[in-house]
Amino acid sequence: MGLARLPQRSITPAFTNGGALLKLLAKRGRDQQGLCFVSTNALSSSFQTCEIISRFSSIYADVKCSEKVPEGIIILDARIYDMLDCDGEEEIRLNPLHDNLPICTEIHFDVISNRALQNHIMAQAISKRIDDFKEYFEGLVVTIGQEFTLTNLGVSFVVRHLSPTESKIKAARIKWNSLLKIHLGAEELQQSNIFIIIEVAAATHIVDVSIDDTAVRENYISRHKAILQLLDIFQSNFRGYSSNSQFAGIVYSDEVLPFPTFNSQTGEEQEITPLCSASLIEAFRKWVDTSSSSLSTRPSNPGAALKFGLDRAQTLHEINDLPTIVIFFSSGVYSTGQNPVKITRTNLEGKSVKILSVSVGKESATDIMEAIAKEGNGISIHVDSEKKLNLIVDAINKIANR
Image (cartoon, rainbow, N blue to C red; front, side, top):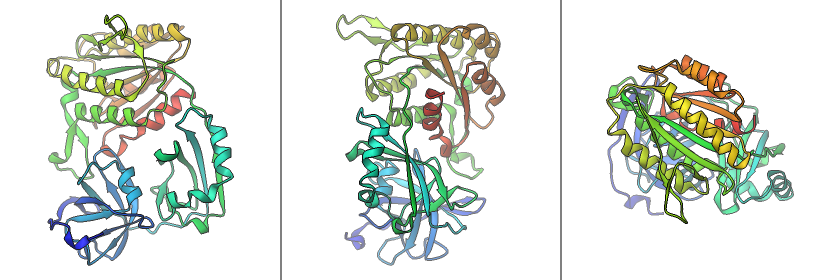
């Protein structure tokens, strides 16, 4: 690869509590044994483990200085570039760590088939050819909960346990020949319907979701934008697409608007449609963004949204006898209407519905969102920074199997 021919670009530091967080232009390298390369003066030492942060995700990796790399550029190991879902020449942020990571000697993966095969059958097949997977993991820094999707093989690996591991970020470095034990588990994902409720009122346009560790206002995005990014992640990582599952969604302020779809045979408008593919979530996301413009100054009535949503969620269940997961994206604020916790309690009884509450924003009403999840036989997560966007993936898997 002709590193010397890459364009010159200046380094832009953004200060964090631990020092400088560098903004660099990402380039896709080759199989570099997990190493990423920057210019000689980019880091305080010639070799450091860093957190590499893209628009939608972050990953830990070993970074080495090289005279062949121009300033402002980072050459990512091809696997890391793909896992970060970089789009062309993307600007990423580099956060150097100061802790030494151990080399992993024992790892436990959950194996997930993305090709309609049972997970335990896929795990058994992989166990017989485990050394064939060395090329996918050699040299990488992994963390507990991290997911690796091998698109060409139609399989994903989720890290459930590492030993030894660094105490703070729960990470370790993989050197394949040092791995003494590799455990493969298989958790079957229960098929479910999905009903999504999204707040688009004035409260969601508050700018208090951080995109790095600084306290500078320019490094925050609105709750609304964070919700759109969460939908992007859901679209890309949800494994429950199926013609058997059903989908519906709404947005709300002080009124509720259902997401309109159309019957492919009759052309008639409808609110419920099969959850066949990621393109449906993409269309829903675009509709959410468009709908928000007319409701962005209005008060919030989550009680009305939950009452509407819980009734429709039960209708989805009655179509196919599958449980329905209600994903509730909200600030938790109710500036009009009834208490949403009480609404959830009185309207959920007897329904085959579970609620995933996603409170968005540093100052969101997390106590209300947690109470809604508790009443809704579900779980809650709090997204106050870009680093936490991927929490939604594990949360959906967890609630589906409760």
